[in-house]
Image 1 (tube, rainbow, N blue to C red):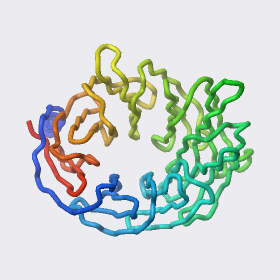
Image 2: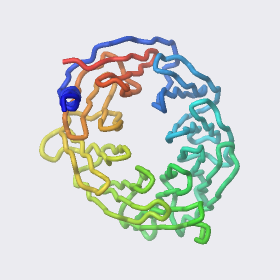
Image 3: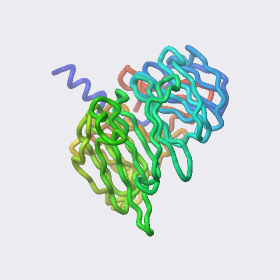
Image 4: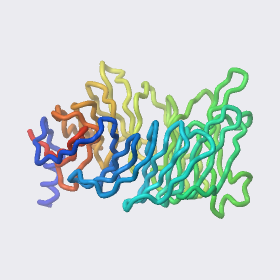
Length: 354
């Protein structure tokens, strides 16, 4: 009980500043972007990809040419693609696993833990949804009929690379609707037409985001609601939850579905968290909007420039302060109350202070 009480004291008390433990400087391009992955940090830019440890040291570097680099991560792999271009590179913690080119421009991309990549390829009349292995061999190719399904605008691979979730936007006679379609590329989908094992239609809705929370729960986020699906091989609609306020941003973890919405009661914004049953478990007002919001474990991390706010899943304000460094990434450390702040040319380790 003593240890648990100490843990609660450490994690629930509010902090108003951070103190630098140490800093690791490295002169790099100001166009670099960063993403936490495994036990390190991915640095990606127009010139390629590098994997860094928590001392800002390059573990490996892979050159590349990307006009608009975009990244997607999974538990065991990540991929970097040239958004609007044709190049995809697939990586594990140890380095590159494969590189290939697509025949049409890349609009959206999702990677599984095995490095299987699904993409939406742009074509106004006949877009393609194609799934590749890590070295570019085509596993499944879906030629999309826009008249029948609509135009694909979002997709996500399941963790094992077996199920693909796609959101289609359909318009006909001035009416707008969205369709959420599940494809199963394993045994369950072999006997189904085009591997389709589930489909739901939503009138008057745009669904720009879909994701898997875990092996059996997936979510579709619309402009005014979200839908929870249950099932691994052939997911089925479980619950639809309406969001009354205007959604400004959405995020999630493997346990929570989160939103930043306009505050109806007063000026500013609020953070809302829901569990996998669709029940709201936390609402917390925040004064201003942040450009970046993500969830790590039981913490919601919001940051914009040097301003940072950290909330717990129970609504406790852990931190609100000026980091004194423009943050490109804020990553929790394995040590309680410590974080890594990635700036343009410096990785800073800090601890929370009052």
